[in-house]
Every structure is written in structure tokens, then in C-alpha cells.
Image 1 (cartoon, rainbow, N blue to C red):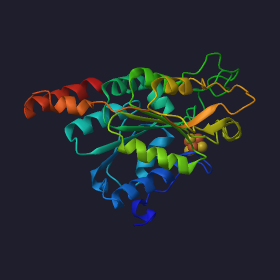
Image 2 (image 1 turned 90 degrees about the horizontal axis):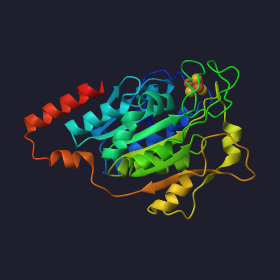
Image 3 (image 1 turned 90 degrees about the vertical axis):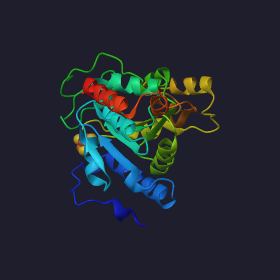
Image 4 (image 1 turned 30 degrees about the vertical axis):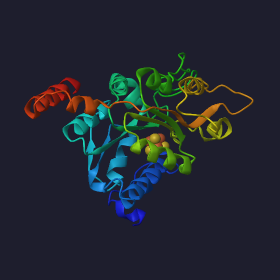
Length: 288
Ligand code: SF4
């Protein structure tokens, strides 16, 4: 099977050099590989995206997908997973999407260990609306809404995911497709909430290639099952653009844990199918 199999007729409208291309070019071979290996048939995969430049990715992959609304990729994915646990659900979401308006959904999905994969296209700027700051923009960031420089610190989303209970936590970079493929495959196969923050460079409004090239490094000899070591590595970089003598932005899998998933608890709750359907509907209504 070739990668062409998943191409669509949609014209790709991302800016040349945008980091979204790397995410697209990493996830497609992973899905084809899992299909060819007989592990995950393509018809059992559902993609969900939010609002922002990242969201167009579902138009470019010939797989069942759901274009949701801003900040609501995770609850939509949760609903799909609960309605049909046989499906593998992958969310693509932006940093403005997942870390601002959708942050509470991220926390609850991590806390509940919902068995979905969330890939955050973290360009640290609102690219589609031409350059406003997001929760992960660094201090002094200058953009459309902060022409004199941002005077607050960024959040560390890995720290939030970790303390909320995510059972798979990783960080990739859009200039490292092999690592992205490796992380995506493991994230999709993980049974539980997989959280993958990708430093996805926006060449038009926040071009960080040089900074990331100089300051990222791959996690080696790190045991992702070591809780304390994971916490230390997660806190090594605070998402501010400090100059350091040595690379200080780790990339790779920080944390992995086996734990009961939300849908397992839900399916074993003793509720009838009808009551479960009612609960799913009520749950989705409260989310949207
Ligand atoms: Fe990519 Fe930024 Fe262009 Fe959006 S504005 S397509 S994130 S480079």
C-alpha cells in the first residue's frame, strides 16, 4: 500500500514551510502501517479536528473524520469513543484550541483516562487569525494583540497533562519526522489518554525553527515508566524562550502508564444500553 491511498482531492492551503506538513506526513504512514500490519483497519479510525490552521488536516487524509468546533475536539472524540469503543479516535487540535478554550476538556480527558489520542499542533500563536498570542506564547512575544510584547509567562501543557493524570505524554517537533512517526504510532497504540504536544512551527507568524534546532534534544536513556524522572524532564523547559548554553527542550516519550480506561469503567458500570445512550447524550449536551 502507498501513501497516496490516503490522499484527498482537497488543495493543501497551508503556507509553504508550515510545520503542519510534518504532522500530516507523519500520521499518514503510521496509519497505513498499522493497517498493513493488521493491527488497526483504516475503517476503524476516526479523526477529529478543531478550528485553526491545524484543523484542515482532516481534509487531507482520506479517513472518516469530524470537523468540530473551537475547543471541543476532545469532548467530541470522547463521545465517539463511548458510543463505539471499537473505534480508534485521534484528535488533532491547536494550542489555542486545546490550551485556551478547551483546557477543561483536556484536563477531564486526562483525569478520566479516555482512550483517545490527542495531537496538539502547538505553534504557540493563533496563525489562522494572523498572529495573536496563545497560552504557550513566550514572555515578550510580539503579535497582533501584543505589539509591545506579552508580559505574562506561558503555561507548560505537559505539566498540566501530567498532573491531570494523562497516561501517555510525549513531545515532538515538526522538524523531526522519524521521531514524530515513532511517537504517533506508540500514542495511537497506547490504551488510555495519549497526549502529544508537537512544536509545530508557524513560519508566517512565529518562526521558531532556529531556536528549536538549537535547543531541542532527544530523550535518551529515559525510563517513561519512572514517574519522578518524567516529572523532572517535563519541567526542564517552561515554554519560555530562554537562552541556555545547552539544549534544554527534551523531545520524545516522557511518561507512560497502564491504567483502566474511561470506557472500560463506563461499559462495566452496570447501566443498560438505553441508559448508557442517555448518559452519552447528556454528557455531550453538557460539553457543547
Ligand atoms: Fe501554518 Fe502559520 Fe501558515 Fe497557519 S499561518 S498555515 S500555522 S505557517
